[in-house]
Image 1 (cartoon, rainbow, N blue to C red):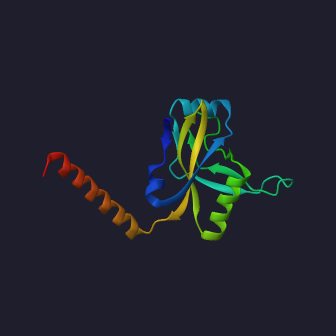
Image 2 (image 1 turned 90 degrees about the vertical axis):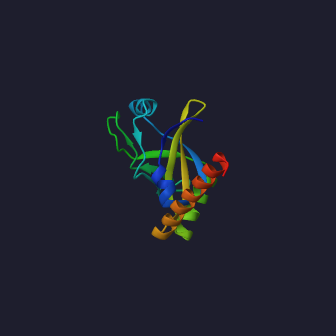
Image 3 (image 1 turned 180 degrees about the horizontal axis):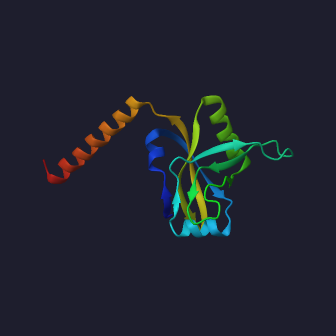
Length: 148
């Protein structure tokens, strides 16, 4: 599973509690952009919009992903999820105050997929603590490697 694009800022800003893998509805020039690694996920998010009346379920869309070689680089792209997954995401977002963001785009059996993370936003002090913990872990690994 090769990551084409990652949203590293999303993992820093949001404490991801659950992930979902979704297909993306793309046009020809959009898949060419992804295959050329010309995709940017910074600032992108997933929103649930009103779906078809016959199903009663919302539909998930990817907003803010920029595919630079596409004719419309900032188009709203529908996501392909199972009904159970949409209900889980909708329940988390509406009742628990969480948010859904794309974490990465990768290939699976030749198809472009997006990994969606659902979680709560981190406060500034949580981010500082995360950086502190990361530095301590890095220092401990360096000490173990050097034999101190």
